[in-house]
Length: 355
Image 1 (cartoon, rainbow, N blue to C red):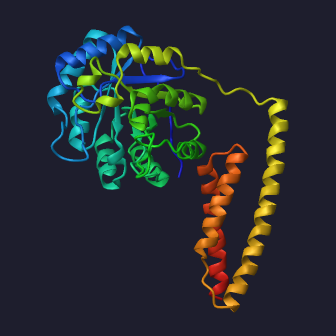
Image 2 (image 1 turned 120 degrees about the vertical axis):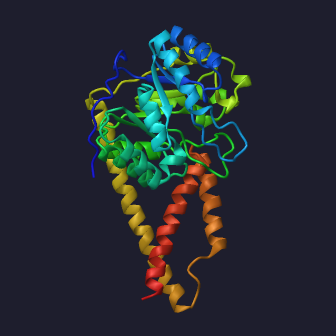
Image 3 (image 1 turned 30 degrees about the vertical axis):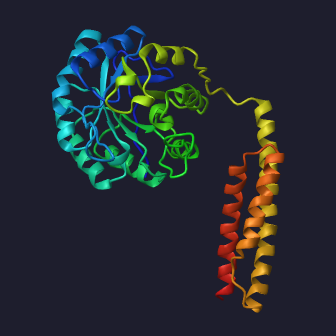
């Protein structure tokens, strides 16, 4: 299935990269909302975001003011002219947000992971043309992300976009939600006209990571950024560590290098031909390696040996990981490659063993 996409075409928003959506994680008080919005507006931000309903992982934390905060956002639009964006997770949220004149809705990571919730939101959106942005699901599952986009699109929403906020990981040390850039890149390959924004705040979970992650997103051709900004981030009621002052956000945005996609030149064409030839050689080598693996499987079958020899597998991972470092490659990359090769080798050996 494909997506029917039309440009977001927001009034008063120039169609250039990056589109910037900024504001506090949560709408806490009317004063906080207005002060943050005015500072952002003075720095040129045109779209204000704030969480009205805040689903939290565990109960007991601040879960948003709720519908009472919507008039605060209306004041933002009246006094600054900014467009408004907020998260919706239920049909009632959709109804209330649209009634309050919210210009852009987004669906959060936890909601995206639940097709029942997404479908209920899609049903509530039928007959409207509000722009909707869909965050990636919590887990690295591109099919869930794609499914959510298709459900919203099937409701008649064509001003559609995606937000990449990273994925949960049990062993991440640097990022709150590691980027796993290959997943949004694959999403873009499937749907070239789909605009993708990056949420460096949730991805990094720390203020100092917002600038480098934003730059990476621009280098990868993302259309925009959704950044959490607060007039007093240290005192924020939710996600304080990942919010920045409006003036800091202005500093970050001012130093972004935005590269445009250019026409392919002869030089790039020749280099790509080299890549194609090297890829052909890689495929040839992998074919030969799998042939040897199948011969090993025949030996194991003859001598009643198990398919997986853990000592040998550990030896391969350690040796090739160290070799990768010497060759200037990330050891995790090398490990991932050899884990995939080993997985296919095991599959083929099991096939032979069970004949």
